Image 1: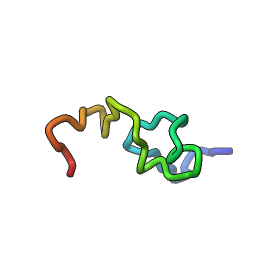
Image 2: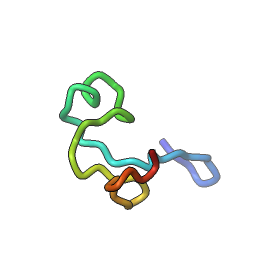
Image 3: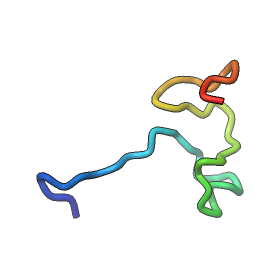
Image 4: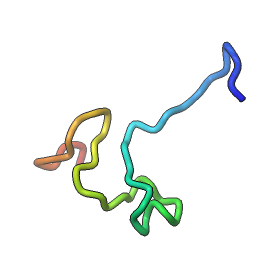
Length: 48
């Protein structure tokens, strides 16, 4: 439960939840195509 004034954290990346990495708890290693960080495509090596 979240109450007014609680500090919360939300992941900045989108992940598929279906690949091996996601299913084993490593969503930061998601292998899905078209993944985004903060709504920005990772095309051309962005954020690498």
